[in-house]
Image 1 (cartoon, helix red, strand yellow):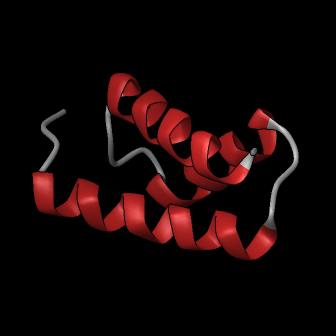
Image 2 (tube, helix red, strand yellow; image 1 turned 180 degrees about the horizontal axis):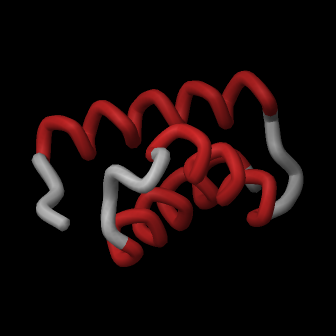
Image 3 (cartoon, helix red, strand yellow; image 1 turned 90 degrees about the vertical axis):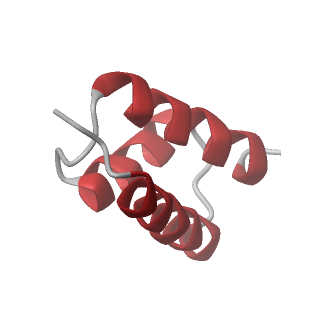
Length: 60
């Protein structure tokens, strides 16, 4: 699977916006939001990086 950097950035921003709107309270909720947003378009490492980045922002 090859990740297009522009598409990954777009998915990251969409997932971040969704997470900000929903205000998840657990890492699992953030993971679910990212999973639905990315829909298998990114590899596991990229998925985890997006989840970690968004979690750091919304789970404070």
